[in-house]
Length: 161
Image 1 (tube, one colour):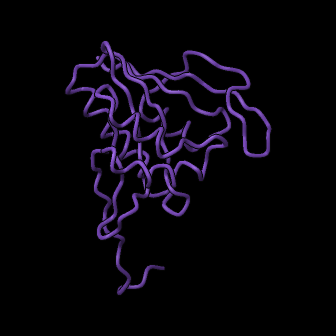
Image 2: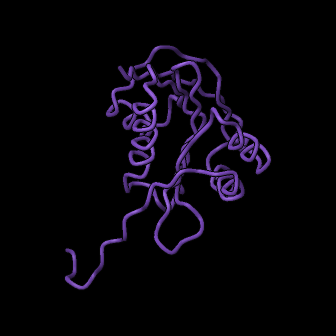
């Protein structure tokens, strides 16, 4: 039962990334990746003109609750990485971030968007399938979990034209 005096959380703004976000992105990335990217790696990626991305920023909060980083070259795009803070999951932030990427790619007249996703990441797979991605390949033993176990990656594609 929802009480009448409870407030719905304020919506997140989807804001373009800049190299100044590198430190916050590295802090988020460490939550889910066995080999998280460093601040320097994010700074380098964000300073390259072919790379772009978005962060999900709650009002009055400095640290984003999620981000997506993508690359566009020669009409084809790739999701480099996506992360949503554990405390912010289940709010549709992944969808909002991907929508930002898709709008940018449509404006740039990109032909296709690719990504790799851990075959055991059920929520991400569900999101990508809802966004019309289809499996086009598989990489066995691509990801290594924090406990050392290896899992495969599904290579997925969404046609944009």
